[in-house]
Length: 350
Image 1 (cartoon, rainbow, N blue to C red):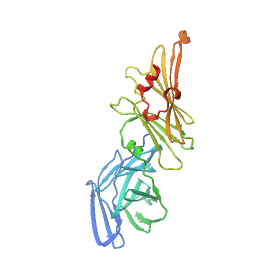
Image 2: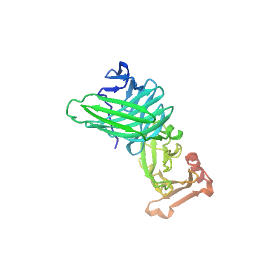
Image 3: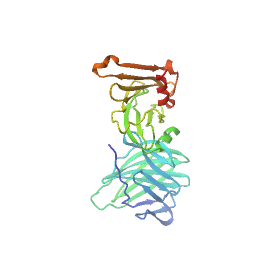
Image 4: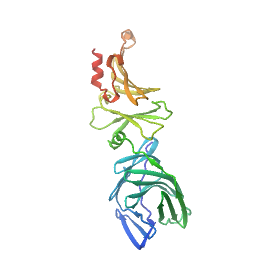
């Protein structure tokens, strides 16, 4: 089920930092005024947000672009300046906000899921492409039925210890965060895949392909104007935050619009094997194509294992049924990305 969220900025945010008692005000898209003050004990400044894209969870600041990218199981990865980090945030709130507080090259980033009775905040420290995750905190709004005051934040950061206070409607909570972990930057291949098209997912299947106890994902995606489907296979690794990504864009074709019975039937998985079953002709005989790949966990590679076609006639001519299968001894060692429809069809003519 698609997770639908709207981004609201119905409350003003007051950042209680301090320097010379000077007041500063910034406007967000002409809708909300963000006011904050600085004191002599604080150096972070709330950055002005220039624009936001509600549909793609994209937040543009003068120096940075933040975006929430949907990952697996309705979680979200945080993208900063087009680099995607493996954050796996759970955001099921009515309103999503990203707040960026800056001191020179240091950033304190708050990703907020805001609901009527409270907010969950994911707290990050960011500097020079390094992202560190501190913790998630929950702030409950007491007396929520009253007209809500603006949220007020006070943030102090010293010796890797982050102290945050949040107050609203005369309710103030203090949080001290000391422990953090570095968030992995997703490998280039996955970054490129996640930045790509807005294609439609035709089929999707979860299975433990590398047998490590973690579910992997197989997606068949149709992009407008493309002759072939995109096949994306993401293999998880319990010893690393990075996923191993495989992609093929020359193996499976969308069905002919004049024939609803032709095309990809299903994805079958068993242990470290993946098979794509494709109906290639209708009538008498009906021909089905089976392309099987095997995952080698030691080499972290996906190879063509078997390719076959079966022809099935109606009951009166079932004796004419035939099958042709090609295996590694026929085609050698071929990686998943290098398998294409033309190559497979040429095997049949040998």
